[in-house]
Image (cartoon, rainbow over all chains, first blue to last red; front, top):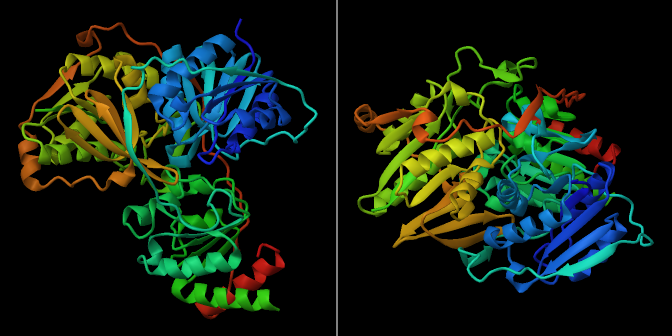
Length: 325
Length: 263
């Protein structure tokens, strides 16, 4: 009889735990547990104790060179085998680049379904009820799944991890990947980083974000200066990235990054729901826009109607003055 | 001579003004806004663009558009044909009007198999109505072919597909044997706009219409239940900064944020 929660955790490329892993363990606990956390990768064995400290009752580690870099053909069969062995009622993983790729493949292999990009999960009896944004974030949909296990991918930072408790006990088991040599049909030829310097968008407490209203790539230099003074990171709307004004990794929105800073300063952004989906849980949105009817103002705590080219330099100068005093 | 199959879905226009976006909570449907025409899902036309870029380079490439939907989906197929695709298949069957993503994937996979041989299946990374992002990968698993997601560039050469895909901090290039599924993302670029000549030529391109029976599969079952659909409440108290000049507003903003201890 299928029972318990299986979490597929994730390691970052520099060998740390992706924080969504601990959020998922927390969510799994709130769904009733027990929580088994699976860690696939290379050099990930050392991350297991942290999963236990944050509430995993069991950790399955598959530490294998073949899993060093994500490929669906390698991860899907391993994930399938683990899931069949654990026989959970619910499987959850992060709505990350890996999760978006792995979850639908795993669901089909198991003959079940997955609710993607969920922001709320609860159990009603033995049914998982998964709530997720739809229509670019304009609507919310709630699903139940006719299949076992019931799967969901979960938006980062939508769930709370438990308090860390080093005294927690949990079983850690190691398994081999056991991948057949012809399992992986694809080949990674090349990888290249295009990362902005400084604070990571996902971790930044302050984000300064530019939209089409910035008018061109040059304007982003001012936004970068502002972000630097505020100790934050620079984001961009999808329109801006599509126009090539700012690098793709800075894109914020439904198909870009979801960010949760304490303060989000939107410059020249109209507020398309697809963009708002990237900042849906931000409490303090400040918007600067020439257009008093811009829909972003409805979601903003502070609204400044004006040309950013005049607002932002004055704002920046005053900020520097206040910080100096 | 690669045969590329592009999956295309017609959706309510995502540019529908927020004030006109309404949900019928009883029926669990979005109510079509009066006078707002449905459109092809944007990532799907980007997929057609990816296929056309291959066709521009590789001689004798043929592109088939496949769409599952009611009568109006024909317009989406016509749009893709007007972009430059060669033929269309419209799966139009009341039996699958309420198909969920998994029933949809089963139907589309059966259509793809009926259209074999094929070298590449291109889908959008997600449809811009439900934003699930599962159909392309599910079809790949049904067909037993590789899938490469989040493509910003797709090349076809000598039985291999080379995809540059978007990672959180950069990009990677993945090679797959054909046939495979590729899902595309907006980083690939703008889909070409149909020119008048292509629109006229499209009128003569064939669009086959199939039912689920024609595909030789039993009516597929849904795997998820939509329990509720609603517009979330957003209550934000907005403070509008006043000032005689934009610069003055900028200064006041700094003071306000400082007082709120946000900077």
